[in-house]
Amino acid sequence: MSADATATRGLVGLLDPRRYGLRHQVGAVGLVLLALAPYLVPTVWVRNLTIALFFAMFAMSWDVVSGYTGQISFGHAFFFAIGGYSSALLNLELGLPPVVTVPVAVVVTVVAGLLVGVPALRLRGPYFSLVTLVAPTILLNVFILFSDTFGGELGLDSPAPILSFDDLAVTLVANYYLAFALFVGILAVLLAVTRSDAGAVFTAIREDEDAVAASGLNPAKFKVFAFALSAAVGGLAGAVFVHTPIGNPNPSQLLALTVSIEVIIAAILGGMGTIVGAAVAGIFLRLFQLYLGTVEYVVPVLDTAVADVDLLLFSLVTLVLLFALPGGIVRWAVHGGGAALDNIRGRDAATDGGRDPPDRDALAAVRESWREDVAAMQAHVPRTEPGGDGPAGGDHR
View 1 (cartoon, helix red, strand yellow):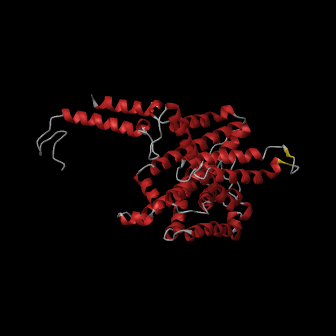
View 2 (view 1 turned 90 degrees about the vertical axis):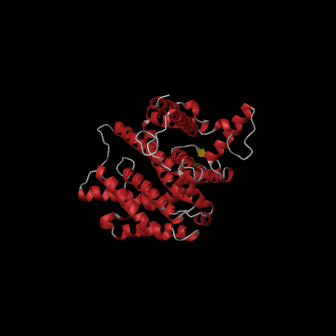
View 3 (view 1 turned 180 degrees about the horizontal axis):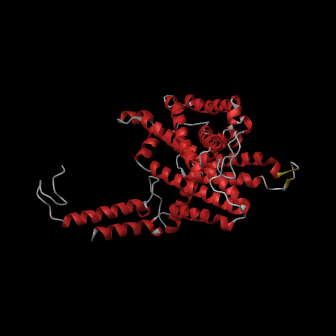
């Protein structure tokens, strides 16, 4: 079998949905539905979905450092504000286009994150969390103290949009797809990192940092990497957010304590240390909150409209979900779906809680197939003596 045929078979295998598990197929369907959403929902919900996608990006940026390494940050809005304000100020004060201000804002956010994170990561437990809680408070006071530059509590004027058209509906749809593309890109990058060896070290740090250090690895290096990655993602989302019709560089949208708390709730409710859980819960929680704000039904006992007590109801529902699903919605759905499939197929669940061999990861199956094909080819290639030319030239031992 030629190398081209092997590569083609590998690519076809990667694109074949039958080789993937049910959860991957459900995730692919979810992304397709999001891609088609502007054609399926009214314009006002396109706007709400755009808000939800940005909120999901904020939640994912928190999960990559707090969910994986266990370093709980209570002030992640610090990153969103640094990114959003940096991009807006560069656009408003210097006249730079968003295509320039957004990357610069990401760099500024990473630098600011490292200035706060590197010393803070030397601390453990509540001391680290306290530092992250204080950081956005200091930033907010700086914004108020230098209100001529940062606009104080009212924030800055809206910077130039990245995408704008004469028709408002077209502008909303275009910005939705901008948010969707950014959401998919961030999701892919974070999944790639957290499913790599680095992600395994992140998880090991969360479980037992001393054991990681005893194994010869430097936990501080991986924690700084996770913190910088989280800052970059949060700064990127905040920077793009202020250049859309739904976002403005003001404290209530980027720096308020409620922003940080809602991000934590979304990531925990979705499932800490999963990335996908933060993304899913971020979207649904924000949509649910926005939906409650539109319900005019009057609650009999309270004699008030649902829209007037939407935050109370949202908090109560969130509290119930946290009690009922302590592991997160995604883990509950994955385990419940797996158990249901096992019952349907008449199989017992794996005794160690893992997956049965037939449900192994499709990517692992493709990699194994490639290895077998390469091994078969190597078995038919004549070996050249050490020091000679050719594919096997030179002994690499």
